[in-house]
Length: 245
Ligand code: NDP
Figure 1 (cartoon, rainbow, N blue to C red):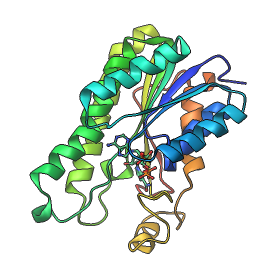
Figure 2 (tube, rainbow, N blue to C red):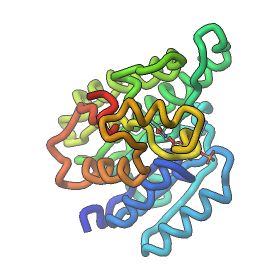
Figure 3 (spheres, rainbow, N blue to C red):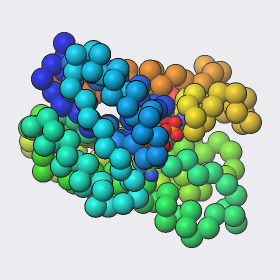
Figure 4 (spheres, rainbow, N blue to C red):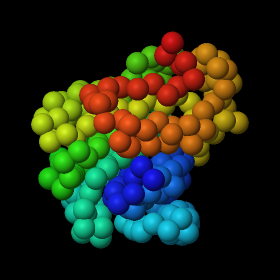
């Protein structure tokens, strides 16, 4: 399998897109560490599924807003598996709302989870990653197209990941490490359920007229993580059903 012998760390791997990524990487052969925030039981379920695939698995409770915890998660994953080949920065906070109603706490929290944590994760991982490793970050289509009001904070945070990804690609390229950004469109998760209040509006902005499935995001992550993705770096890849078309 393409990821045999590799070790991956997926943040926010207890549910949604991160869960699908964790399972897909394990199906492709990787040992997988994951972080979760509050839902220990959900994380344990994912760990059991990874182990059932014959891979090693490890989970650690980590608030992405806590810088020390973020660094410790990277060190813990590398220590658990004795190596680290793939980082998937997935955990995110989806705070939408009118500009006037966003508090300073909202701003600090969203920037800490969506921007500072991926930065710190990448920084800590870069010190551990094998040459030829991968940093894959989950952004959002809202970095490219804000199709409706209420996205000032979220789009601000997700746009920062474009610069992070390009700069990481330049800095780590000499070691054969690639850095890429995957920008999903609306994907059916607890953050954005396909039967939610604004679901019809969001589907309407896609060319395909529907929500994506977490596994459809995981498929692109798996391609970037595998050997076939080795010449892709510094890229922002839309997996959004045409939301930004
Ligand atoms: P979910 O809300 O379904 O899952 C979030 C995951 O992140 C969970 O594993 C959760 O852990 C974890 N998490 C949440 N907050 C923190 C935190 N502070 N510290 C550590 N872990 C945390 O989200 P999605 O799967 O929908 O989203 C995943 C990523 O995809 C996010 O970055 C999101 O912005 C992005 N995205 C999602 C889209 C969508 O339509 N769903 C569209 C575009 C981008 P726990 O289970 O313990 O709470």
